[in-house]
Length: 335
Image (spheres, rainbow, N blue to C red):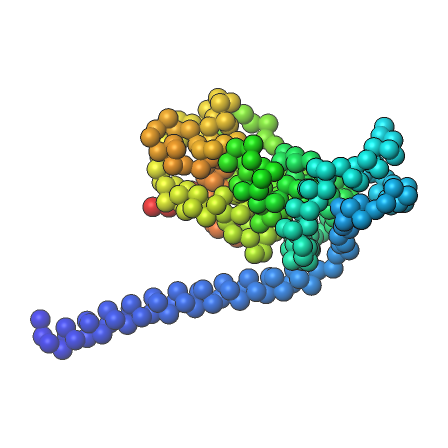
């Protein structure tokens, strides 16, 4: 081959390589600009949102202040309990210890308030009819199943449920439960509570329908949580999320080869969807895996659908039946 032709070929090869790099960089910048524009629009959304530190008000109260607190927060004082119960709680040793621990972790609640306000602005943007509730912080006995309670007008936050996985108050809990009791997951838990209101549990009994149900919940978090990591959305540590990503293809192959997608076996929930120390493949890798890997895969399926159908709104994604969403996603696991 003539030298001139070889030289031209080499130049063209380099040009194509550089063009691809430049094109990718330009696409990245365009995506960043679009995301920045969207976040600017969302930040401009007006909401009426306040945080009331009931926990601190109660901690600083005297017996004569109980009546005033009952009038201000009637929903926190069940009528079946007399005033003497609340007065005794003011000096209860465990209550004081929980309050002290919560004060240490949430010495400055402002960053959490800012994140909560951002969450409710995102909700208002995607669900315009939604009215943000007021948030009430509380300190009571540890109840990890009800870390936050979201109603139409109130958000109750149990601060004692976010003291950090190694805190002494969680010493009797399993590690997979304790690791979620950290303030980094607080706003994500609120987002989950909201997602359950707009994402009804499926009547379809297949494993696939429940995978995609949880996948939709996590996709809602994609839209609502501007700064949360994917690990935080799922309640994973960064190492657990990395494991899920690295083994996504093998997990999917296991589900396909064992014909699990359309199975109605309820035991699959306990193996791959419910909170657990690890997922249960019945293989040696079980002890290495995080729990709830079925939710992770359901999330990737929903994401695959959304990436191929950018014109479809969040509400339309939530309304789409699981089977149809799965077929249109053309999901293929990352290698």
